[in-house]
Amino acid sequence: MKTRKLGTLEVSAIGMGCMGFTHAYGATPAESDGIKLVHKAFELGCNFFDTAEMYSYFKNEEFVGKALKNLPRDKVVISDKFWSEKLPGHDFAEEKLSEAGIRKSLEGSLRRLQTDYVDVYIEHQTDEGSEEQVAFVMGKLIAEGKIRAWGQSSPTLEQIKKAHAVTPLSAIQSEYSMMERKWEKEVIPFCAENNIGFMAFSPLGNGFLSGKYSSKDKFEGNDVRRVITRFDPKNMDANQPLLDLIKKFADDKNATPAQIALAWVLAGGDFIVPIPGMRKETRIRENLGAAEIELAPEEYSALNEELSKIKIHGDRDGKDIKKLGTVPDNVNK
Image 1: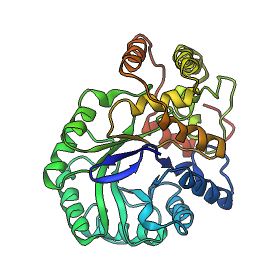
Image 2: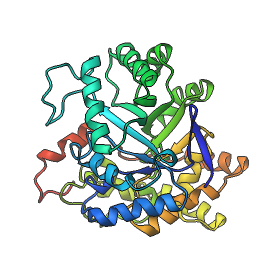
Image 3: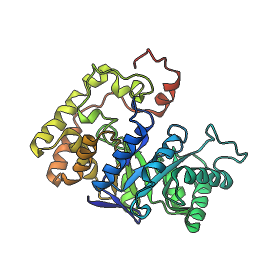
């Protein structure tokens, strides 16, 4: 497996997003099966695993802790995220983004992850107005060895600049794929210029870019695709030209559509690391295999030129996802 740098941290060119092991995409694998899949990813060269205290309200961290427990700690890199507001189970009196609040959140995460440090500690959905104070606390935690580096999730360029001036950032984690490119104008160039890694979540458009779903598929229960508008049947049909384009390049490169979608993300810069979810061994082999597929500069340019002609219908909005808890189970969106 090829490697890349997030600041000074060396990680596999493709990481594993672990959220789906406990929620978000319908039925989850049994815990024992999930652990085997994490170990299979590690065996195939993936050393970078992403979780968050928000995912399943701490249960995802607990799963990742169990999954990584028997792997050599110095050979794996853990990315974890803390939410800006208290979550169910947070019974401490301090404000969440105060130094005491952040420390208590980190202590809980370390306990659940069964480790004494987090490699990359990320503010989840960066809170506006607290950039400097959070960055100052991160500097202290780095100095104490409780975290090795820190990052922000989905920040604006101004938020990045404010934080980076206090304690240098090692990573920005935001949605990035052929379906979501808003970061290319300001954020990604700033990362490239300032030695900040960019972690691309949902690099496959929540699975849409794999070409494995159609407008006839039904998403039920706690599957977030019920409320992600790009999975509205009409939008899925309208986005077919994008899948056709990817399929054309996949055929030319003897690859799968998912691999082309990931190779495109990788081609954006050697500081960009996609972290797709993958809950089957076939998907693990397919996604990690994308690291070996290189788009030549002329191929990347040609693909971008064609992408510029395609309108994307629907998106992935956090406000929509928050609706999931209020959408009746018998309503498919």
